Image (cartoon, rainbow, N blue to C red; front, side, top):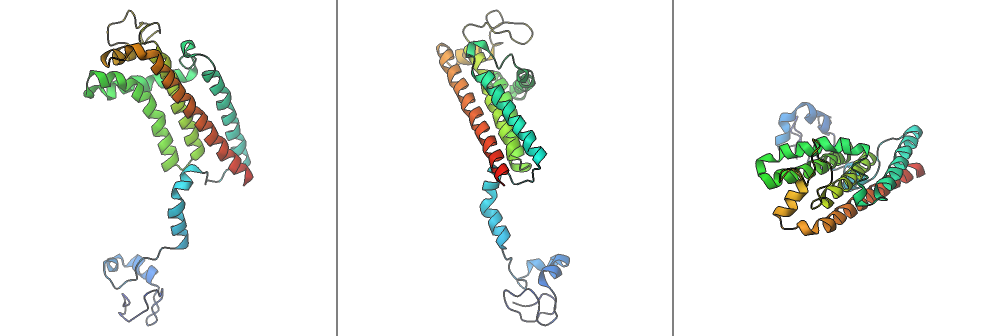
Length: 245
């Protein structure tokens, strides 16, 4: 191994040339053209880099950013609000359509309708399914961005709760496939609107599963409940760990 400047011999792990005195890391920073030669020392993985590589996945699931006392209190209030809201959405029956009459339904609705437009090139069946996919994908994307890009696990837990809430919002729609009693966009109803206007009536009829609408609705509802509870436990654990620190 030779020095990239004076070409004098040096030890493999040395950081300073014993002949001309240059610091290899600094020299190569300003002479990047030398990095392609074998004259330079191989990259050395520092302890911090190695630790970071091993714990990168762990950091995605645990809070790593600084959080003041005010931040901790604010997040605790948010978590408490989500717990109360969850009870009000989970407690009533599917037929009561509690999620469909909540404030978040008005937030979910634009993403539902946008999903029909986005998935329209994939045919009539996927277009109808696209409404449900749209309102599930949006909070999922928010969760991924908060978890991976922003490195905000608590924010990601709130987004995960939103994913579960959307399942609760979809369940009454699935449950209404045969009855067609829910009011649809524009003031229509499933029993009186043209075939295909009610998404899940069309989807279950075309797939031969219309008689299972109630069972499927219960499955969707239970999935949403499980996701919401998981999100609350995740958020609670993050706050407890932060408080202990």
